Image (tube, rainbow, N blue to C red; front, side, top):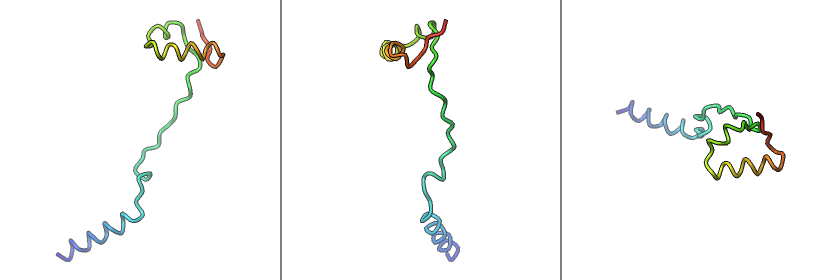
Length: 65
């Protein structure tokens, strides 16, 4: 029983400094896609297609052939 008490005390002490960020994996952010091929636009759903075309017209994205 003494071991169980010591383990519970250890667990409570360890949890005091525990944060969720210590368990997170390092996530590498991919760069934003700014170049769009004409054929890749054909596979998009209509909402995504409209957003991409809007940004192409605003010259935030570029089309490649």
